[in-house]
Amino acid sequence: MNRLGEIIGVKRLHFVSEERLEDMLGLNSGIVSLFGLVGKHYDNMHIYFDQQMLDDYQIQTFHPNDNTKTIFFAMDACFTI
Image (cartoon, rainbow, N blue to C red; front, side, top):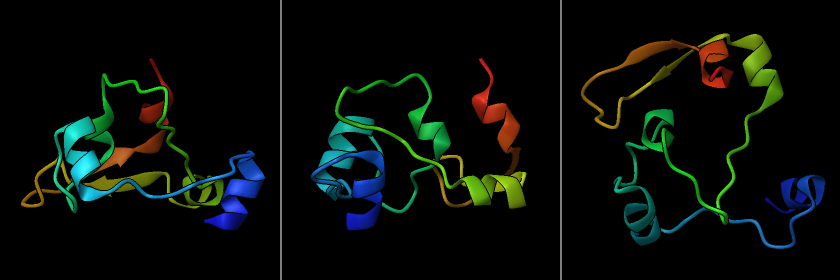
């Protein structure tokens, strides 16, 4: 976390607490995916993707905010409006 913070120019980088996650996104820990971020914007929250992961795995799997199902998702679709 310290190294990533240096790379992106942030002094304090950390994972959000379970309580804050639920308050901010309305999601429980363990079932958070890209789908829980759709339509949300917060000045104090940024999402970063690992470029090598995107390059190596163009299809990702996600739980649709419910860990009883899995969706196969083309990552290119995440970056289109």
